[in-house]
Amino acid sequence: MPDTRIVTASVKENVAYMNQVLPVKESFDLIERDIMIGEREASFFFIDGFMKDEIMLKVMDSFLKVRKEDMPASATGFARQCLPYVEVDTISDFDQVLRNLLSGTTCLFIDGYETCIVIDCRTYPARSVGEPEKDKSLRGSRDGFVETIVFNTALIRRRIRDPHLVMQMVEIGDSSRTDVALCYMSDRADEELLKNVKKRLQAIHTGDLRMNQQSLAEQLFKRKWFNPFPKFKFTERPDTAAACLLEGKVVILVDNSPSAMILPTSILDIIEEANDYYFPTLTQIYLKFSRGVITFLTVFLTPVFLLFMQNLEWLPDMFRFVALRDTVNISLVFQFLLLEMAIDGLRLAALNTPSMLSTPLSVIAGIVMGEFSVQSGWFNSEVMLYMAFVAVANYTQPNFELGYALKFMRLLLLILTALFNWIGFAAGCVIIICSICFNKTLSGRSYLNIKLN
Image (cartoon, rainbow, N blue to C red; front, top):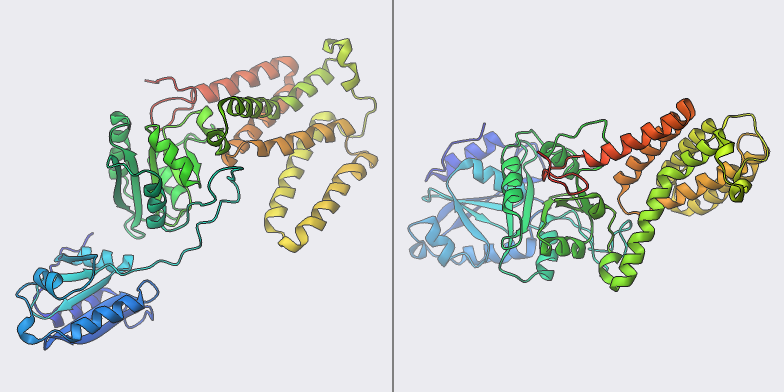
């Protein structure tokens, strides 16, 4: 429950309450600093590591020059006349005081004032706004979102200098109190969608957002576990987020998360990448078409090959060369399934391999998985070829979650085709189409952008 206690005019009572609520004596980074301002007792509370020392030195130097007769009658007057800093506020509710203090601001109590003076001179540890590793562009800007939400909003403001750009800040999580920014263009965003998103954000009651943006996504929209297709589009590029805002979409930023959540979304939005915005129209069309064809092949290439190998009489004469010329000790479907797991194993190993060893280990893995696997009688060379194409083609689309959704659909097609032949293949295709068409997102629209009731 939020604290309803009010700040009193006695600095000793306020300090005693702050020490009662906060583990100031136990936590080395929670600091209390007592000083005299205009012959009155005063106390600072701040978190070490969040405060800008140079600014606070100048502020405290100005406080030491305040005389008794210069002290205003109220804290508001003191903030206006004696506090030479820009971001200053006065708060009388202890719940708001604690919330601001734990967010990194400096709280000042002065004897005789019934409000707390909040000085926002905080700074967060942050890395440079370098280009994201996953979502790179050939001709675009080289900056990207970081884990500090204020930096991320500034990157968007730098690109959209329009008074209609609104950024509303809310706090979610009783314990984490994570800052969440809702960004939209007031003259372009869909009012119904905006109202729906705001209502869902206000209705979230949770202790914390443990995994930041992913936890928020799960709270906003309860997904069905059996449909693996993503409900949201994420980007780590501020130029992509700005372009989506100008198209009338809504962007959600979460503190401690270096990516933006974009609403509404469709299958065409998810497979887009930053390069689509920077090239001429003809080049954009070609890139989108080729990416769509390759995405289609990643799902259907191996199941179709398995289907034709089970029904060789269906294979046209001009494609007879793709038929298997030799057989190995393992059936075709198990070869595909084993390689699917092996590719994921190599991917996970690459994530945890030190950079200095990644190249030699990749060469060793390629040799072992390639020539030796065929010679040992585990796999056919054709199977290795098609799975190599699928493994590389998965990286043509930028969305990691969509890649695994397509992988699950491919595995489903392989298993159904192996068990029920063409009937299973047809049933798998129907399941894939239904999974896409009826994948209802937060905006109330499916992946095909058809309004669902």
